[in-house]
Length: 171
Picture 1 (cartoon, rainbow, N blue to C red):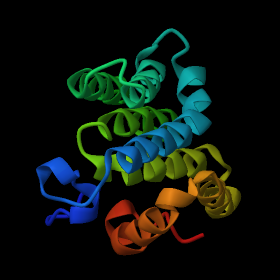
Picture 2 (cartoon, helix red, strand yellow):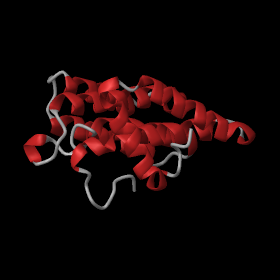
Picture 3 (cartoon, rainbow, N blue to C red):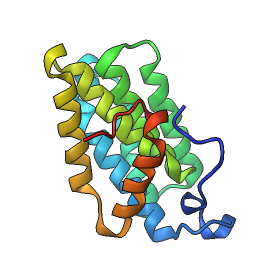
């Protein structure tokens, strides 16, 4: 579970009574897509003929451009997570990262799901002695990709939800 029991109004759009602007919602989706794409090869190595995670990332980006509706991006995210179900380790986590990135269009707070699963994928792919360090490097890479407009929001969200995101944001 990567979502809190009580929704943070900063991740609820203004239209729905929160404070999140459409522009920042789109930046969250783009950042989540970048996090997922960064580890996508870990899935594609295991399942080179399964396009679902890549399609989910593409749908996340297409949603930000207004080319697909939220429900289409959300459905693509579900399909990517379906691609993960019979896998283990890095490939599974990478597919989940892609799925989480696509569903940011539906619930902005899934942005941390994409990032957390990407870190878990990198950790799982690394040899045991290097796993934690690899995860910290991935976390730092993700932070380096954060647009300034959403940087403090995401960093605060990482602090608040680190415990329900497997403590992966300790970098």
